[in-house]
Image: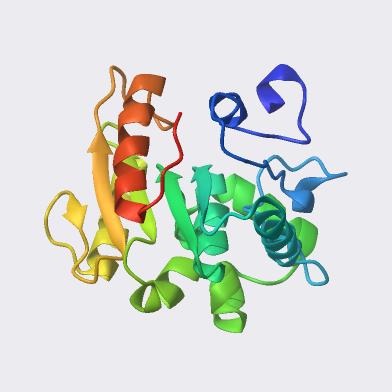
Length: 224
């Protein structure tokens, strides 16, 4: 973790899944390897899209283990990558923890550094127009997503992400209620309470309950 003077590779939720008997793997964002960047949404650069390599690794792992489904887990900036990976995988599902889904609302400094490093002279809007699957994944793909694809868990006292990401994601999926399942059945939206006003994942006990509900929604059975 960057906060522990280890900027790369960065993994989160790894300790959680060490408690499961199911097969799992962790992916660090190769975009930021050998850079000073701490966040790049697994987007890569003009020559390198990390998701293509993740596709191959996941496909080989599923064949090796005999798995018929895979759940991609990600929070905040990693949530964007988890969603994109799930949408690219036929039997893939996304468990998202307060994710960043719309790159135009990403932290200004982080996005500015990413664009300067890899896409000098380009704007987010220009990249979204150039490759919507890569840079505008939710907006471009959600209408085609099958049922049971995404479990979206958002902190109730995370005002910025609640407004910029959760609210817009619900509207695009056609859900008017504060939480629930989208009309097509593709996304289940849920909120979690917390003791403080902050952005981040839920406490472990809250995570476990939503993980159970997510597996029911996905039709999977990964126990923790």
